[in-house]
Image 1 (cartoon, helix red, strand yellow):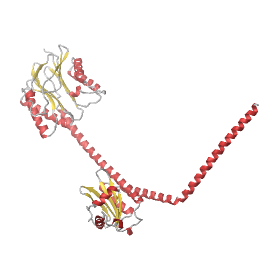
Image 2 (tube, rainbow, N blue to C red; image 1 turned 30 degrees about the vertical axis):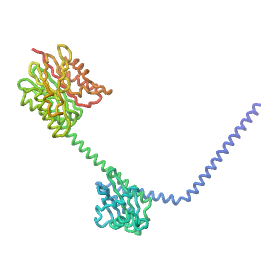
Image 3 (tube, rainbow, N blue to C red; image 1 turned 45 degrees about the horizontal axis):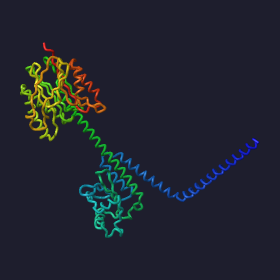
Length: 482
């Protein structure tokens, strides 16, 4: 019984396999019939497909030939000359003109096939230009009846007479947003054509050639702009480098002072900064300090900073014993006159002037960042806020400027800085801030002035993710009293 059952199962399986094979064969035969039908149809279209292939090859050859000739072009103007000549001679027309759009409409820009320059600068009739707004190209035979008596009639007749044509094509051509052209190709009469009248095939060739020229001209314009930008950048870099050298040269190197240690540093965010730091010793053993910050950073703020520094140097040379408020009033008036009235710029600055009077006594005037003093005896940091107003923003700050006094005892440390230090941000956009600076000064105040400066700047650099503003610092420490 088991053998009979197995035989029946095998027989049923074979029948299923045979049925599946028959279906596969039927599908194959159907597919072969469809292929045969397509082959029969393809034979009928063989000549047409051959003609399309011939035209595609002709287009390719024309484009390759034109591209090779353009490789030798050195000037942009020569590209237009080659293009106008190529479309005339290769497409088979006697006349060709490029009209360029200007303030007064389209006028002749380039031409080929004319014996004289009498058409140079001639206009394209507005009626034809308006018609091109609706259709990118316009095919015209001035002798055909449909054009008689319509709006193009009078202007068309004058146009054909001036340009000595009867049969022509107008093609709208834009290279970029600012350069708008119209190409005209035509013949004296339809009988003079060297090939059948204009077709979509000719339009395709003209469009491809025009596109190639447009791409070439655009690339040349961009390359020229890039070269110009590079030259400008190099010139600006040289100017910025010179300004930076001048600015850094203004920072004193020799800062040896009796009974004090002094160090200072200026780190610019760009090649030229708007920060000002200065030290000026006097013959009597006293000295001046200055710290300021011009709005923004870059070449103009750097120039304003140098103006302020020069004025400061001149004034303390003439009036070494003057009050800081007096000098600030003069500097403010001169800066406002130069920057706001002469340069028509809106830059201004914070500026703080400090005069040493001897025996640890100082006089200060001018609005700037709070002054920090580490009091060695107490082991804490004192914050001094000096009232005042921005320098160079208004013509007169006399009523807004006052002198304040403070004194440094033995081992006390004076810290001056600009806002670029306390406003330095980390990757979370959190500022270094005043509190961290106070703690840093308290931590490092027992060290030398160079070590204090180095440690504070190291903390700020480690904190900030990117320097976005100028950073300046002045550290002054009084020696132990003998």
